[in-house]
Length: 80
Image (cartoon, rainbow, N blue to C red):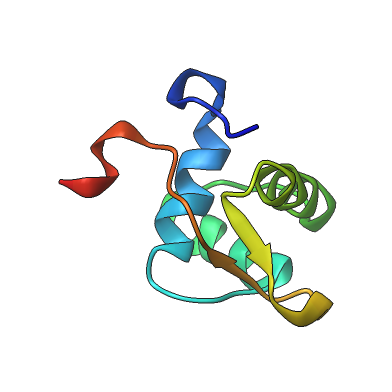
């Protein structure tokens, strides 16, 4: 079951923005969240959000390596 836009929190939006540019690990996403968005989130929290997005088929853990890529963007404005 995919998530609707209303199921996303602010961190999810920022994670999706980062992954729209390419693949990344939770550690790299956490660093970029802090540098680009001023969000100080733990790597564990970022990892949990990314796992949740993957469970709903929005992200893919590439070859089970811990590197994620965007597969289906749930944001309504993603296509614009």
